[in-house]
Amino acid sequence: MSTDHDPLRRTVIAALASAPLLSLADTQDASATPRSGSRILVAYFSRSGNTRMVAGLIQRGLGADLFEILPAHAYPEDYLQTVEQARQERDSGFEPELQNKVHALSDYDTVYLGFPIWGETAPPVVRAFLSAHDLTGKTLIPFNTHGGYGLGNSRSVLVKHAPKAKVVEGFVMEGEQERKTMERVNGWLNDHPLAR
Image 1: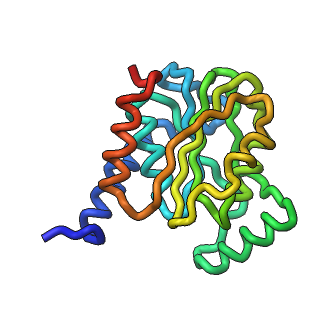
Image 2: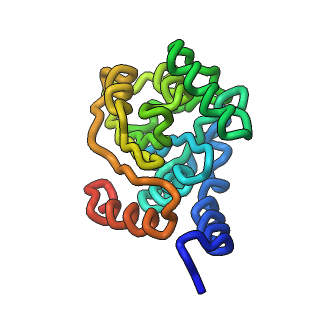
């Protein structure tokens, strides 16, 4: 018997969705060149794995390159500590140092940017990613997961931190719905002009 909260189902789906993440892990190395030759980059930040799963589906569906946004100093494992640290960073405008940057951003025309909504906005590490990369002339397509409160002001954060990029409407979904997430992302990609 399977339910929406079946731990085995969740583990299998997460493992399958994460599989393509390993194939391009070295894209973050300064000397590495994209293996796919794609002009599309999927960059994402994920704490719980929900956004990582969507990133993997988009990367696989479009044959794109993948980049995981990581802070130089990881957020605490404890959820409440992470919430408090993110609130303090947001309120002070702090942008954490990044572990890596995309070294060949000029190779891409389109950047899919994925992140969870934290405190009704983009996480501070995503603001840091945007500040550290020049997205001039690129198409920026967000994909977001949230815990039920929607996108908040995340779009205005993207526009402010990437003012010379073309920010288009992206994909948004409430987290914790793996099967539905896979179905919706694949449906969205099937109707998406870049997937053809």
